Length: 297
Image (tube, rainbow, N blue to C red; front, side, top):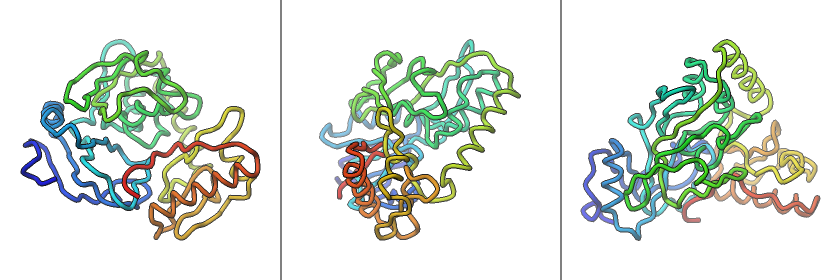
């Protein structure tokens, strides 16, 4: 795709944009094009005029993602500061931009005496990502707090979808493919800021103690199967500390893969597949990826 065949934008459009610096694993190839829209109107206009055959993918904080070494075809859309605001919107409700972080949302909830959103403190992503994935942790999940969300569809149409329309299940929604979440409303319950902060501190300490947060990782690698914990199945299959090239199964939390410094995305993904195979042989349980793998191999 040449620049002159792409729609004009008010934001920033970068060809052959390296994605490794933008994702937690710090590995992977380039995006054919990286688009950072100025605002919703800019995003709508671009998608409306973009050849419908060109694939579009949203990128948040890149925490739950393996970008393959061959790079990502089409356009990767990254929502910047213009989409990162959080403000009160009626009783016990926050209006959050699709690019706002879980930490900002939970802190804003505390400042507005809204309880029930503390678990977002521990989700290392943006509103857009955890609305799509039904993100959850520490006993909470997005489907319990989401009122509705504003979504720009692949053809540039802006729609508001109530939570019921997303048909949430565990770490999954039926949000249309290539749609981009630009805002969401979350509703909690009345709470005291001190108690809310104490719960956020408890969650932070628990994560720090149990997860390799200082490493290049992608968060939880596999979904917890019914009646099982993924980390336990991985551990029992003898995979703790298992390596492939620069990729390693975390010693601290076996449902985390780590880039020890030189791993390619291929090594990280192949290590994950090796773990899945070993778990299947050991326990008969087929682990499903929670991390999204995107792009050309």
